[in-house]
Length: 461
Image (cartoon, rainbow, N blue to C red; front, side, top):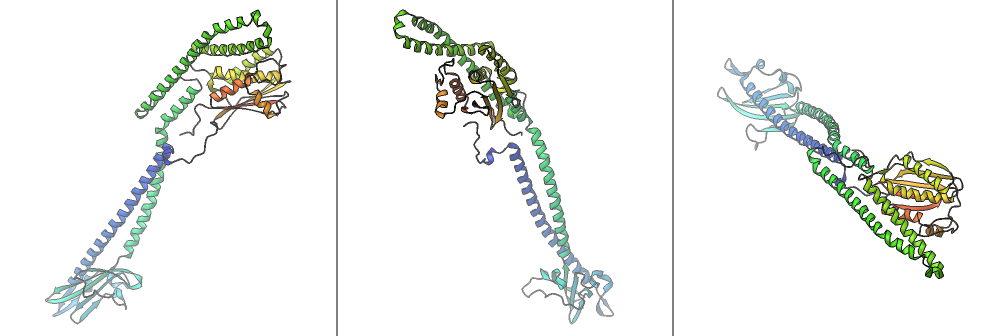
């Protein structure tokens, strides 16, 4: 059934443009943020290592200059060294060996320096070691010549506070980046909505074309949409022209049949056929059916010739006119209750809809005792037309099938050719819909016709 949309799993190619653009932006910003964070981490590691090494080199040289000669003896001038070496467990430590003499920084307190460099370690190489109180130390040992004597200086510095400060800055950067990401996505959503407004306008214009309020789409669109709008307008013009040519051809065909039909009808009145009354009656009925169909096609062709524009069916206007015509044709009035507020316009050909509603209401008028209920609703992208009466109805399923057959009549005492519901069923199928007969809540027959909307509604962009 065309009215029921199949629920299928959509691939990413079928996502909305807004979703695809937003996802692309989100992935791009996440990748950029990740790459930036990794680059900052690597850069900081190198910068920290270079800075720490440079500080150790400077501290080692300052300690070397703090070794002075007084009274013929080498001494360590404490006024020339960094005060951090005087605070216990400050994170800055030194160990100086000059022959048999050893100087230790007061920051070591009563602790020992971490293990010295191994014999295989190059002169001046840096080592990462575990220091006192769980500190992370970068250590360097170098040998110098001072006053013609060899001095071995080992310095160490705790780099953990600097690393911790960087991690804190990295988390702050991550938070700011996520905030920027949220703002960027929100801005992108707003911008994409603005950028897709021409598509939304085109969608509204297509609905207007479907309902007969417009004939073509506005060509004043962004450059990227111009080929699409041009092709749609070309298709609309081509479809309209094809429809008009088809109806003109049907009209010409109907005119061509009128004369032969008139001749055959006249021949049926010849006295030679009076002896075959039953055959004469059957032929006359079939000719009446053909003449009625020809008249209908001629009327539609004339309507197409009078108005080149598509005219939709307006229930509030057209149904009241149709009911008034049926009251005159049947010579009696019925109570007709309406429930058509859900649909203002049916975007289908007015002549076809008059044919459908005319046949359904005509059938209801024949059988209803006093009341008819007319409903038009929208369900699953279909217009649902439902006409109920309080007549005898059709209880048997087989009888309902007969009622939908051409010429199928369940009660020969009632006037008619048995074509009304069959015509409705054929026209419903031509539109891709269907017709069903059920029992009405009023007690009679309920005729339900589903007609797919030619341009199914889609979610707003």
